[in-house]
Structures are given as C-alpha cells and as structure tokens.
Amino acid sequence: MSTTSILFMVLFLGVTGLSFARHAIYGLLLYMAVLYLHPQTQWWGYDLPDLRWSLLAAALAFAATFVHRPDERSLPLFNRPIVIVILAFLAWVVVQSIWAVNLERHLVLVNLLPKYVLLMLLIYRCIDTPDHLRLFLWAHVLGGAYMGWDAYSNYTGGRFEGFGGPDISEANAGALQIVTAVFCGAGLFVAGQWKERLALLVLLPLMVNGIILTESRSSFLAAAFGGIVFNYFAPKRYRARILGLSVIAMLGFAGLANEQFWDRINTIKYAGEQVEGVDTGGGRVEAMAAQLRMFRDYPEGCGHRCTAELSPLYMEDWMLTGVGANRGRSSHNTALTFLVEHGIPGILFYATLLGWLYAVFRSLYRQLDALPDPLPAYLPGIAAAMAALVVGDIFVDYLKLEVRFWLIGAILVVVNLRWLAVQNSKALEAEIARQGGELKADPAGSPADGPPGPRPGPAGDSGADTPLPVGAHGSVVQRAPLRSRYKSTSDGAG
Image (spheres, helix red, strand yellow):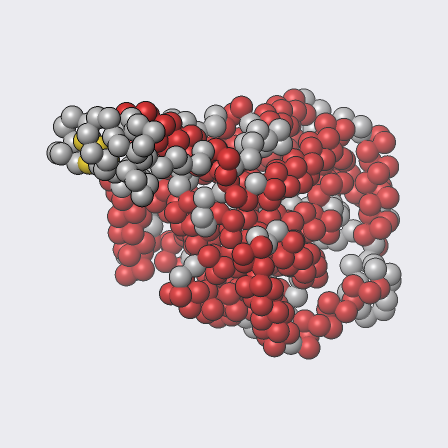
C-alpha cells in the first residue's frame, strides 16, 4: 500500500473518531473531502479496500449526530415547505418508474434523490452554530481549490475535462461547482480574520484559473450574474468592502484569462447560429423545439434521460452526437429537463423551488439584524452561489448536481440559526426580567432589601454572583426589551 493510501486511511479514521468524540460536523467535512478526492479515480485509490467511501463517510457522520444531538429547539426539517415539495417530487419520480422510456436510466435518479434528501438532513443536523457553517463553507472552498489545482497541474491544452468526483468531471459541471465555491469563499473573506483572508488570497485565484481552463461559457455567465447578486445582498456595514472585493475580483479574472478563453466567450454573441469553423453551441434552439414536441407527446414525463433516448425520433441527424446505439442528444436546459422528463409535476417543482429561493433570500435579507454574526457576511455568498446555479440551469442540464442540495441545506441552516438566535434572545430577556423582579427599590433609590449591587447566584453556583446594572442613585436600571431588536421570524417561504 502506498504512503498516500496509508495517509488517507489514517485521516479517514482520525476524522471519524473526531466526529464521535467532539461533534458530527467533522463527519460532514469528511464526507465532502472524500467526495472531492474521489479515491476511486486516483492512482493511490487502487490500494484501498473496495468500499463506497463517500457513502461510508456519510453513514458514520449520521451515526455521530445521534451521539452529539442537535439543539432540540431547532425547527423540524421535514416540516419545512420546500422539503415537503422535494419529497413530493421524489414520490412522483418513483411513480414514473411505471412508464419511464428507459427504466434503467430512470432508476439512477430514483436511487439518487433519496440520497440527496438524506444529505440535506445530514447538513441540517450537523450544522447548529455559525462556526459549524463556517467550517462547512471552508470545506467547499478547499474542495474547489483542489479542483483548481487539479486543472492547473494536469492541463495539456484546449478545454480541461476530467475533474474527479461524480457528476462534476465534465467541464461545465466542474466549472460551475468551482463558481459556487468561489462565492462561498468570498463570503468567508468578508467576515474572516487576516489569516483566513491571506489563505483565501491564494485559494481564490487558483479556483478562478480552474474555471478559465474549462472555457465554460455557461459558468462565465453564471459567475457574472452571481457577482451582481453578491453585491445586491451585501449588508450595509460590508458594502464598501464587498464592492472593493468585486473590483479586485474582476481585475484578477481579466489578468488570468487568456486569449483562447476570450475567443470562446466571444462566441456567445452568435446566440447559437451556425458559423463554419466556430463552436457556437448551435442547434440548441432546434433541440428545445424538439423537446417541446416530446412534452406534447408525454405530458406526464417520459422518465429520466428520456430526451437522449427519444432524440433520434424528434431531431435531425446533424443535431445528434455519438455513434451507433449511443447516438442522441441530451437536454441542455434544466427547466426543459424537468418539463420533458418529469412532466407537469416536474416543471411545477422547479418553479416552486425558484419561488422559494426568491422568498427565503428576500426574507433573510430583510431580517439581517436577526442573524447572528457572521451570518450576514455569509448570506451574499450563499445567495450568489445559488443564483449562479440558476443561470447555469439555462444552458446545461444540472438536475443531478449535488451542490444544489448542499446549498439548499445551507439555506435551511441559516433560517434555523436565525430562529435559534431569536429563541436565545427571548430566553435572555426572560432571565433578565426574572432577575430584575428580585430587586426592589424605593422611589428615592434606597434599596428596600439591602444594598444595591450583585445578587447571589443560584444554589450550587460556587458563590457566583449575577450583577445587575445599577443607576447613579442605586436604583436598578431598566433594560430595553431585547425582542425589539428582532423582526418577526415567521417565514412562510422557509
């Protein structure tokens, strides 16, 4: 067994032990690390036992959540409207197995969606403090930096393909994964200490270079729109800092991008027209029209990946790729994938998801004061990452992209942390009111029950005193109610 394989095993066992000894968040971080490293595709992975390492890491992290239970006051995950909608979509996909055009391909999605639901549950149970969310975002950033390093060290010319990890090896998917990590890193940069910022100044350019090497037009547009969203959601106290960071990011991107990258980006202006010798993404409009004809014939949806299966019957041969039995054309638009492959319920699910994203981010932005630090700085990054995914959906089929469910889980975590912060403030207010009632002061300010100052703590508190603020004449100072700092937490969207 190679030294790298041994090191991986030691780290896997060590972090697993840490998740049981300290907190389950370390198990979640281990899962993310294994997903990015993807030992099955590494040269050193052949020396490892033949196990599904990411599944094993997730299972162990779940077990750790029963040792270190999350806050009992947390909002129940499966009562959240968006989670109920996701479960309803999962049920519909299972029902579609009855008539799916290609059952084998469809069962891939049937098996994958429950995993994503459980993954959201794992994220929700593991992250119960802002510091845990910070670790989660850092794990994503380090994974994106690893992908950037992979592209840098293995690039041989042309478009870089072949990132490690399931469903992100292709250039567009890999680039979009990195884009989401860049925005999460930007949020960490805004709120971080100087050491974190110094590390991010090294990691962020590495990730941006990875995006450039893929020459992904969709990811370029996704990053541009995400940058706008990042600035839009910037809290007032961070706005100048974020604007400066955005200017630096644009200058850095322009400095890293080469002529080959800009030549490909310039093909966007052709809008899919057929231009000899130029890859303009031609045929997409015709493919979309063919997909609409498929929907008319299969309003209930024809099952996962049925666009590729039916494309030879609905599209001209010049629009297809591949040879023999594999000749066909996949969907290049996530919304049309939901419509064609999952019918009217599918597109309703996608529309509901977009509506929920708008509502929940609007709600969180309007209640920034109720978010414990440093969540107000993280919110723009999470919002920008999700916005980038939505833009990417326009050009590529990202129905199965796992990072979407990571971000949904992170959003639900932020909503829950806001809820817990308000509950803590109410508990503190009640404690202050209780302690204030124990002290009585006469109108002249002379205490009726002894001198002003600290009051004895509860029995068994080792004589610890609980001080209350005292005015100039010895009377107890009235505190403003803490509840007034916070707006209502009722969030019909979340």
